[in-house]
Image 1 (cartoon, helix red, strand yellow):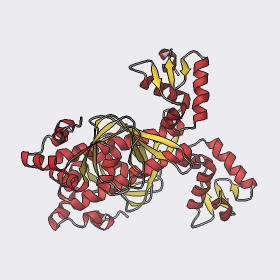
Image 2: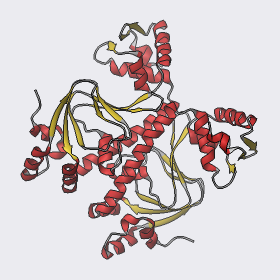
Image 3: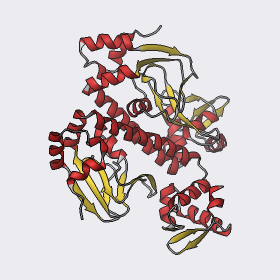
Image 4: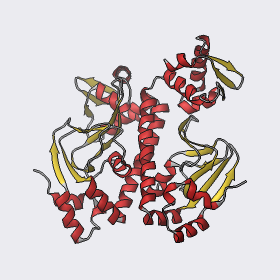
Length: 219
Length: 219
C-alpha cells in the first residue's frame, strides 16, 4: 500500500516547521510513487525534476563510465533525501550520475518549482538541504581518497563486515561487490578466494558466508 | 600592493547586486590578506572561518591520507571562491581537506557570520553559491570516476598538455605530478621515462619539456 502524501511531514522533520497554509499547499504538490527493484530513477545528464525523499526501500546512486565500469557513490535509505538531487536542484546542473532502486521503493517527489518556493520560505529547510549537500561533499572527498589509496583488501573486508551485521550470509554476486568498491570483478573474485583459503569466509553460489569476523576486522 | 577591500564587488559579480547600504557594511567586514607560496590556508578538520575569494595567485585544495599520500581535489584561480569552503560554510561541517597557496596569493575573506547574513539577504548570492557547490559536486563525481577507472597514461598526458598550453616547458617535480594525479612518484617517473623513450618529451632537472603534443594528445 502506498504511504499517504501527508506523511511527508513525519518523514522529513525540516518540513514540520511549515505553517498550516504551506503544509496544505505542499500536500497537494507532492507525488508518491512506487517502483520495482532495478528501476532507473534518474539518468546521468538528465535535468533534475524535483526533490526526492525515499519513504521505503533503498536506492543506489552510481557513476557509469564510458567503458562500462560502475562505481557506487552512495545509497539512499528510508527518510533520506538524495544528496546529489539536492545539489542539482539548487545549482541547476544536470545529474552527473544515475540512480537505481535496489529493492521495491516508495519515492516521494516535490516538483522543482514547488521545492524552490519552499526553500525561499523556510530557513529550516534550507539548513537541512545545506547539511545534506555538505555531507555529500565530505563523503565524495573521502571516496576519492579511498579509491585512490585505500587498500582493496581492507575495503573489501570492511564492506563484508558492514553487510553482515544482521546475518552471517550475504546474498550477492562478485560483480555487485566489484561495482560497490569501484573495481573489476576479477579482482574481487581473486581476493574473495584468498579470504576463503585463509578460512575467513565461505563462497557459495550467489552468497558469501562470513566465518571469522575478527580476522576480517584485523585486515 | 594589496588590492583594496572595495574590489570585492568587481571580483565577485553576485555581490554587485547588493544595495548601497549593504555594500558599505560589507566593505567594513572583509579582510584582504597576502600569503607567500606554500602557506597552508586551511587544515583538514578545521571549522570554516569565512567565505574565501582568491584575488591573485592560485591555491590548491587537496586530501592528505593517513599514510602520507596526497591527491589534488581542485585548484582555485583569481576571481573564484573556494567550493569546499562554500559547502562547509552552508553545512557547518569541518573541512574534509586542506588548502595551500601555490604561488603568492591575495585572499579576500568575509567572516562567517557576515557571510551568512548576506546569504539570507541576497538571492543572487545564494544562486552563485549554489552553483559553485553543485559544480564542485559534479567535479568530485568525475574525479572519483577518473581515479577509479581513468588510465593513468591518458591522465598524465592530458595533465602535461593542460599545463604547457602557454610554454612547452613545465617547471615541476615528479612528486608534484604524482600528487596532482593521486598516485605514487615511482609510477609517474616510470611513465615519464616511457614517454621520453617514445620521443614525446624531454626530462630535465626540475622540468619537463613537451616535444610532441600530437602524440601525447593521441594517448
